[in-house]
Image 1 (cartoon, one colour):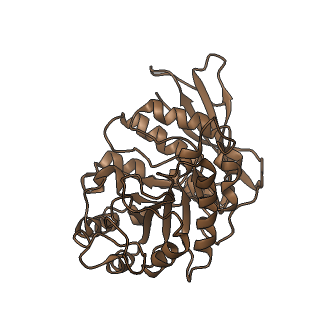
Image 2 (image 1 turned 120 degrees about the vertical axis):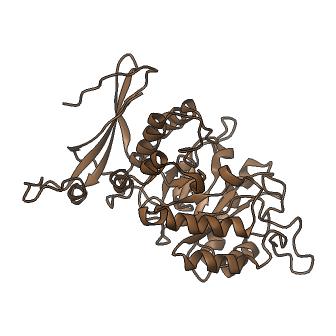
Length: 362
């Protein structure tokens, strides 16, 4: 499986509406706890990861959100106030102190909850506590909220909860990027199976397919689905292809490179999930590739798409419209004549075969 990135002249603008909270004007970039820690982490672990995001160069590359996933919660809410509580054994100094530490490193702090009665790991969820919990998160000075929808059997309630949370976050004293983990709505038996049809108005990013796993077939399955709905992404809202599996160990370096390049080209949020404390040079080179990140973060704010597939399915051509100013990042030759049109395309040539293949772009 091989691929290559090129830049060519093309234009194809497309506009749709999106959440207007001033956030996610380019796809969010960060790191999430889930793949490395699952439920086994504490404040010391997270402070160490904050330090590593800085010292590894990940923050400088653009990965600014440190996102806590499930299992930070206490086993029950406060019996008097009804507020969510953090696990005091794991977080003895409190969530606001952790938030302050993360911010002191130049990072932003992300939090998780579920719209159902319980989270996916059976901690207290936020059902019918949206406004109270939003205020608690704002008091902890979080910058990013991932809302899951576990333990909410009624599909329409799930969709309604995503909208309620959007409203609850909008009235807080500072802006919070809103990530809708809407994969459990992707069900053929209901008319809410396409979150991208309603999510852009309420979410800054929303999942478009089921959970990713660390195999190449999962990567291409998500890409195949993303190709059908690329037009939903724009500044303020991005189709979320799920956490990157780059560096988890289940795929080849070529497959990880292709995943990262295509996530970037599709303008997906780039949320890493590898153990950056033990990150190899090769994985670091993939995740911190400045040229590929520049394509993802391009200010034109369009998603790429598959524009051609071989009749035999052996290869595909994927392209994304980008502003021409980014060309200067790839051309270091002094006094080089530059193109003048308003935008270019980044192109990925993707080999879908299980053997090496030569693909030529004319």
